[in-house]
Length: 606
Image (cartoon, rainbow, N blue to C red; front, side, top):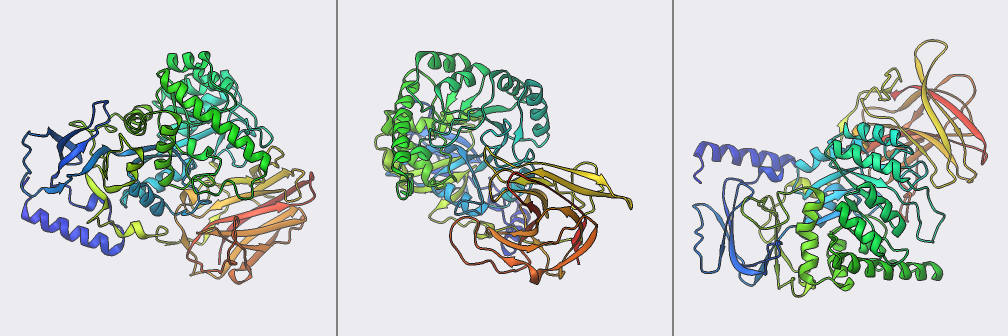
């Protein structure tokens, strides 16, 4: 395709400008030049045996495929890749990951880089609250990245996923009516699918969480399907797997591992078209990174080994019975690193008894169908050009999948020799923006701050959990304030907190260097009240607050905020920078099992 010279110059100038500002996206690279991958062994994911051939890509799509002996000329200006001795496969999927700030790396671009380096071109993120979808999608659009799909999370009160987050993070439902209302609420954020935590079994290593009943789950699935959303479930027991299949769940996103699967579960999954993403990597007793055995109690390790043996057997049984097996890892959880765990999952599927070719289909075509994206997952004309070049023959020796040479997302090279990624792929955060002085005066009736961010509740987690209610109330002098009331759990560190995000979804940091401190009105009935500023990289800063029953105005200079060590792990005490802050948190503690309350108003910076 010939490009207009004026358009060529304009595109070059735009690309240079974006690169200089660190905002270049993969879309800013050349899309008008075709790509010809010549002489590869093509494993197309359709079930056809690998064959020698060439693939032509135009505008991010597969335009033509030629087997050996057929002519496929390179269009004028096309990039030509000599792939002799290499295998060409569809880009890999990982349908179960957590892009969590508690893992390392924690930064979105660094996680994206790891997946691209592993040949993973479509990823499902189960971790984000709905408020974070829009800013994270915008961030991903400005860098080279796999296509990331976001899950809306739904559970039962005190169920898995709801035992630590509030309803703005994981929606709590315990009836068919609540399930339908919950789906409608999260659907407004345009998730890509729904994750339902249906099974509270904790692998005989901890006290069980609550589980979702079949009527509630069936209503959730039905309402989700009405909105065009597939449902993945956290299901880890055979009896709960039967419930999930009867309810019409699209994908069971964990291994059922309490016992061998039986014919009834097989029949139900086949009847209802339920796919199976066993996430073997997260259950590997020693963990993918080798950290699982050290420091683990012997009885816990033995239980893991028993569960894992059942998990391996059950993958083989379900696969042999015709249940679609797909790839998901739970990466981001302890000992399960991003990218590397996807490749390990493929190897574990082979250890479970699938052939290497079957494992590759699980990680490509089967996963695409389960996620409902029919424009990728195989190498066929018209499909999106998510492609992976590796040395070797991974359909015969699955370990060859680790020999990554080049990776393409929608036809654009994102990994391998000659790749030039946007500057944003090296960034550890979005640029910090200046902030208006008023954070919240609590006058809005929709639960959002004066910054148009969504307030969040936070309390200690677990089955014995603090119960709190946060609501706006009228002040005697006029206007409104935020009132937080709570009955603390019996844990000595019990607390209740209100979080005021400084950017939508707490994704981008803000720059507070134009201010000297934080000002707010406060009163309360608690022996322990504190203000916390949370910043990038698990950086926390705390100051105590005197809470008397009468209203008073408090000013806390930034210099009075005490840096804290990392929330998890070891590290130095944080030092205040001021240009990386994401949240303000007001939290109250007190006597275990007791009641606390506080009210705040007119929170801002001075």
